[in-house]
Image 1 (cartoon, rainbow, N blue to C red):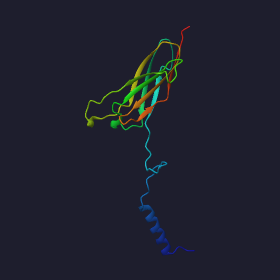
Image 2: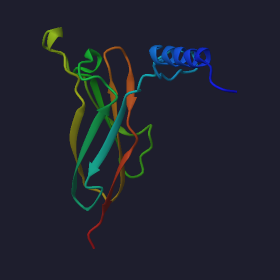
Image 3: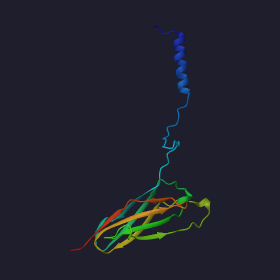
Image 4: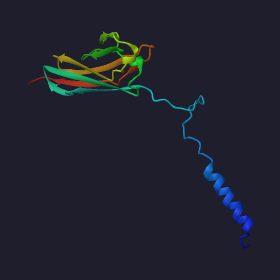
Length: 154
């Protein structure tokens, strides 16, 4: 069937219509049907060194991720360092909690995203550490455990 002027004009009109209609934004839907899928905060925790001979001074560094740098909820959050010595369980672990307070105006809000603490490890064996961050609204973010293995000098 030869191309008629009407068919060519119809195809040209359809093509123009397709090009003029804006594409729908590509957003993920979660189970509740919300349009945007927010990134959950997380903590990457690492120990340096991860293996050493007694005594070991381990430096733990935690990085809070998935938080807007201007989020007032994480400006000076509560910080808890959890330490499990060899033979400890989560129930008997030592916890060091710090509850800092913002001492500046709201216009100076800046989320804290790096946390560092040193621990002196005297006994041989495996040590586990966890960092727990609590925002002002009660949001709790926990890291996975970071381990340090302390070996005895022979």
